[in-house]
Amino acid sequence: MDREKWSESSKRSFAYYGSSMTCYENISYRCTKCSQPSVFTAEEQKIAYEIRKEYIWKIKTLCSVCHSNLELLRKKDKQFQEEWAKNKGALKADYKFLCAWLEILEDVPSYGKKAHFSMINMLTRLAHECV
Ligand SMILES: [Zn+2]
Image (tube, rainbow, N blue to C red):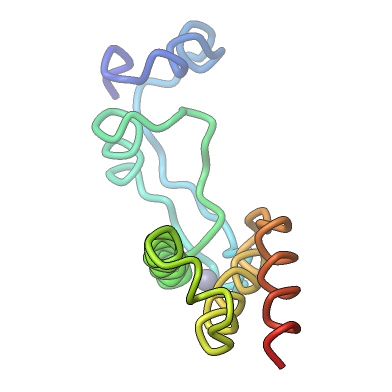
């Protein structure tokens, strides 16, 4: 464990100045999505906190399968956003596009993440106007 490699916000936390821990320990947890028992390994923690500079109190809540599914959803959401920004006029009336995007947005909260309500409401309204 090399605390000096932590992010600035991690260095302001109790874990930096108050903890006597000298190495990472495997942390067992249960995935909040599929309830599979999972382990956040010491090695993964080192990478997360020292290389990716994640906040030290940020712990994992999803297993690796659910985590990559969520990443995929976010990637698709981003693609929809980009298409939307380019072609809003036509896509507003594209029922298939609206429903496909809605499906993604409505799936996100099942992973314990916050839903994008304003977007969901807008897309739902537009989809209703199509039919
Ligand atoms: Zn899972």
